[in-house]
Amino acid sequence: MPKPTWSWQRHIAPADADAWIARLQMAGCSTWTLTERPNRARALLAVYNARRDPILALHGLFGGQVISIAQSAWLSTKPTPPTRIHSKLEILHDTPRKKAAAHQLVIPHGVAFGSGEHGTTFMLLRALVREPMPSRVLDLGTGSGVLAIAARRFGAKHILATDFDSAAVRTARQNEALNFGTPQIRWRRADVKRLAEKPRHDLVLGNLFSGILIEAAKQITAAVAPRGKLWLSGILREQKTEVIAAYGKQGLQLLRATTRGKWVMLQLQHSAK
Image (tube, rainbow, N blue to C red; front, side, top):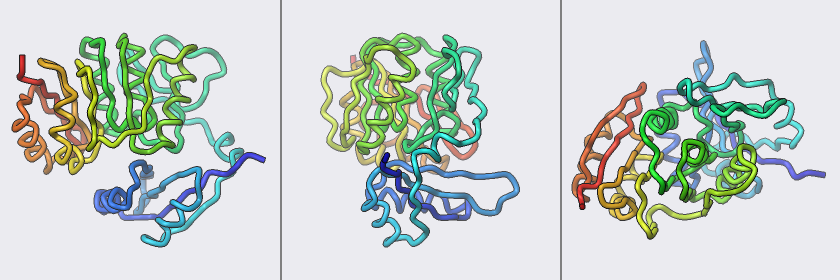
């Protein structure tokens, strides 16, 4: 019999979401889902894990409820509308009956964050669609792998994608297999604060919390090639100035800041030659 997936869940006020996500991160949890529905006063915050013990630990810290989800439950969910980023990219969240079109990627909703519709991921995907794709790309905090997989679809040849959560790395690898017949992306479990990647990358993507982006500014910058680009998301509007200052000290220049709702994406470039 297939093993179940375990979930910690708690209903929260949407206004408290950022505080709750910070608590989860302090508890060592790097992936989560937040579901908000129209005309509902509260949102559902959830964490999924193949192992029960981490979920029980969250329950002990924060209350809420622990749920066992049978594999069949994942397979019987209602169809989810696709996420359209641009005419060049559409994210399907359900496995299509026929082969996906050239402009489509299949990224099911699952245990890893980032299937495309959240503002932080959406802005990065839109930038990937609009700008020329370099050869060497690094995706930090890959989650579902959607950014790395999109980079491959748009022509990147050398892609490394990392996440602190081993379950996310497994999910991302599976998602690449859903979209391509052969593996190309290097998937790795890694702590961004201990990043030491060589050679450097032409484009580095970081969809992470501002606190991590600031704390790991030196390590992240070291992964960017001279004149290379760094795109950062997961930044709240009020945190924008602090993040820009942290990377300015590392020799990165701000090229563009994009806002979607309460979130900001920064596009920076390494000033070194």
